Length: 314
Image (cartoon, rainbow, N blue to C red; front, side, top):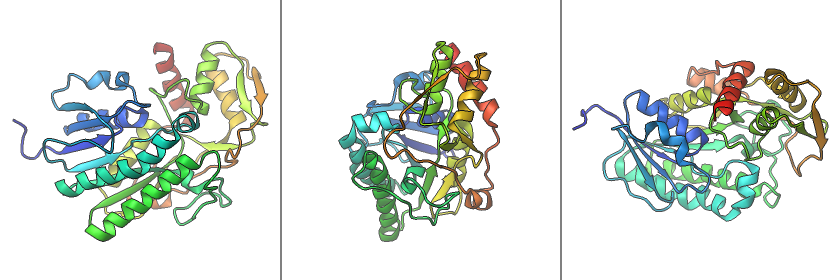
């Protein structure tokens, strides 16, 4: 029998990259954890380290169709394909995850009187015309563009969460996650860090899009998870950027990965830019630092070393 004071958390999409790290952190702090995932893009291997944990339960189910057998205190919603390669392969599933999946999970939170946290994305800002991006910037999104299934699913999810909060008084939180990297990323999902690491370790030239002048702001997964936990436990109901404000060009990133893998710094090839690829991406984290007392602590080189080491041992 569990102690009365033990918290119970539900992680929807918990077999994914960030979700599995969140599950680990919740278990480590003593929570009982239910993980729901339909394994469309999530992987059971991401949960191998906790499958025998007495406080962990995995339910293979869709985000729009599951039930939890005991009361939960918190619902963390991370269900969605997250890489361009994945959401273009599963456009309808991505839109469903941001609509019917979110609504069902909100209803679960209502029934249990639980707090609800939505992991939204910096993609709600589209290809931004304001730098760095603040939460009050409404974005530059093409609703029928090649990334629209993901961008608009997340924007609709934010609207849905806001409506539930206003209509039912549900305690809700919205995290706008910027580029996150670390162990357990799918090496074939097309995102820049796992692609560069996979190519560098395989002795292949790194494929740099365009001239590599576009920027990304990369946050190590442990920092992202710490931000999500701080947000859920805070009193901040407005959207909050969770990301690392250190901006780096893709070319600089490629050279750093090559160096850390013992490769020549110019071993790369240049390929065409993907359509509507954001040129700059950098969060303003003033709200996170003031409302959550949160800021990232893992530097890029340290995080890349950990990511490369995990890929080597993979």
